[in-house]
Image 1 (tube, rainbow, N blue to C red):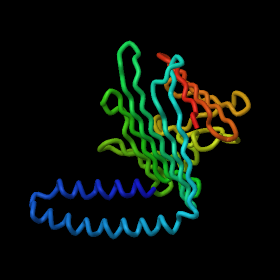
Image 2: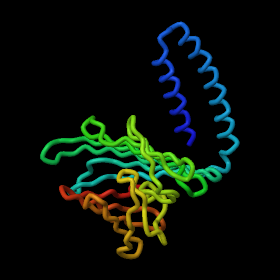
Image 3: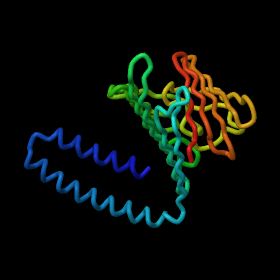
Image 4: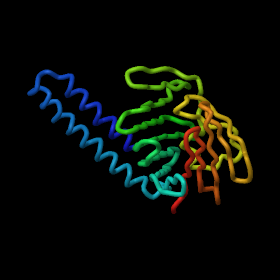
Length: 232
């Protein structure tokens, strides 16, 4: 939650600089704003120190395999403090399928009292942006921001989204929310600690858990198949 807040502050001050046509005045404002940021950051540091003993964090590392060969990596982290739960996932893939391609993905989710407060999803293929959207809870609904446009969805509350699959085994959970497709998807229990999720585009994945931890993901796409395997 704290990193997201800091990024928001930096973006806000960059936007203010772009809007200003009076350079000396802009520099003066930036100086004042930096002083304000310094105060806020100091408060955040003090807050983090105060909550450090109560914070719990973990990280999981995965390798992405295709035809038995490593083609990428995926990193997941979770930090919980009090009523807040912050999830983050980042992945990178570089492989060849007819032609070479590289892919990068970054997803985040912030939960408060078990309800999604904010989430973001960003995907890039060969340097081109493929997905960039954010969900923001507001008055028991979610505002979805996509570039300069925004829409409203009534899918409130969201208590388990696709990123949560890396955090918690979906025992007694029958649906998961997809930020990408902006809808709930059924979770099918295929076997003990094994779950199948059929995506709206016709593709599907299997999720395997061991001791409550996501151990492997089988990706079944119309054009390829791959595995995401836990390494630690």
